[in-house]
Image 1 (cartoon, rainbow over the protein chains, first blue to last red):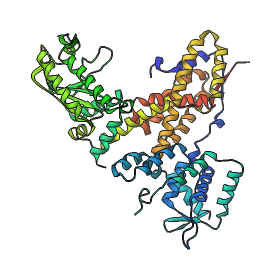
Image 2 (cartoon, one colour):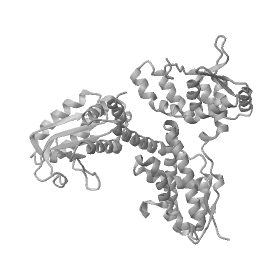
Image 3 (cartoon, chains in turn brown, red):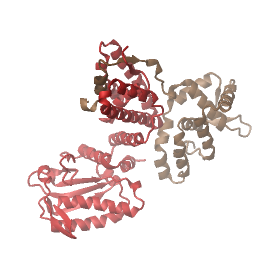
Image 4 (tube, one colour):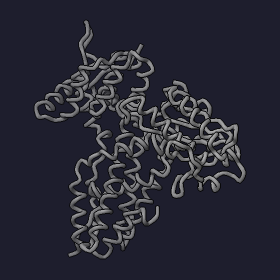
Length: 177
Length: 324
């Protein structure tokens, strides 16, 4: 990088001998993507809003659906993308074109897989075949939901999750038979 | 989706310089002797590249399809752009509805001495209409007839191809798709960065205000410098978002690299007797760290690494104050 392209050399020149450096490393926040507490909260909210009771089965959600929905909840700007994917699903070619980036994104979200494993180990969630159900400590999910709605926390995530109610996500879109 | 289809789709999404860059890069890989022609500063003479010793020429055009309200407008635009290239190759100019000779001063310095073009490949990012074929072939026939043909063979022909034909002809493979994806990410990031708002620029602006206070003699310089840093910071944030949305594994690599960069930067500044002298080297330091995971983005790494340091200034770790 040449001097003319590097404004940091210019900054160094401007400050040299005229200012004292101040270094505060503790103030740099890490991405929320890797914050376990945040990810558990979003996963819980997704489960609370989109898990359903069917026939005699307990309230449950397909693991793939949970993975996709929590991914979008953290990225509300993707609601429009999944809406167009859902609307174009009758056209195989168009559906492929409108969804490949989103599918690559959520399928590669390995952090979510680890969060689910942790929540299962803690008894918050439990596996039931390909579904996830509330575990013995599933009360955590309801507590998070109440806390979030009463104190207006996670508003953008909740709004995105609410928007997903009006979008028909088929099992085919989730890669299920 | 086949390699051909995936590559064609990605190529069709590129526009302007990014499209030309990708086409030329691919041609360089598959054609021995392909020669790229830089457009700046002297002009490309109407050719973006040539091969076969100057007998085959290549012209690229990547309009933004969504910027045209009607398909007809896009067709007309493509015809006009390629007609203009062909006119220049034939050394012609439209004047009062007539074709008159106009020397092309660039071509003698571009094509090998004595070479004449036998085929000109016109490569466009949108080729979903046959309406561009006839007018271009007809025009070229007229241009050839009116031309002194210094650089055009009497039997020269044109061929118009779109992304799919390009992918089929020039063997799109896994490597091509990987490179195209990287280029596509860069293009998307640049577009996103242009409209992205920095969520909380307060700290950064406070630091710039203090800098102006410290150096009132360099206000204009500080303004330009601050804008450059803001742009790089926006690029960095847009890149992070693109990875987070579509490539989570690489996002994790970026997060790890950011931690390493912060560590190295702080180490340098803290142990140096003249910390400001270290500042100038930080973008290179960041680039070195990012290179291991993001080398596929080429020169774009310069913007990213500068943006990373801008982020460190904007989000706090690096600051300054007046001496007591």
